[in-house]
Length: 211
Image (cartoon, rainbow, N blue to C red; front, side, top):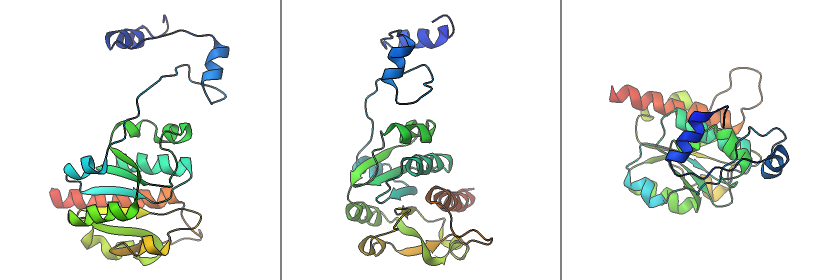
């Protein structure tokens, strides 16, 4: 308490119970080898698809069967940075509250709403009914720069599993399939990097139109 009095004062004022523990107890409570010194018990705070749609989103990241914690958290972080309105995780995706996912978001999971454990077909139907186009990021699609004129529209980017991509029936739900072109010698981009490019491309187009 002597090292960070302002933190403990804020916790007390917020009626958060604070308990000091030994290093061995802290190690048992945390799943990391070098815990940062604070462990908290929090309520889960995902929202419903209805809540997201009620806010009239213009940019959404939709993750289908994303299993890798680092990718999931990094996409959420990129969506936050790009000013997206929500991130939606399909059923069969990694648990958003997995500690590795939480750490890889670096706090972004507290900045924008996210939905978990929903069926892709239900989400796509709701998005399309709201006039939001569905763009699936896949190497087989049209090159991203060719679509810049359409990216200012309300858009949901659909991202699939990095190992096997999309199931055919999921890919068929998209309005267009879009590829991030590779100009160098790299064979491919990882999911999180491709998602960042796609989300920022939409963010640039939407903000340019708004201004």
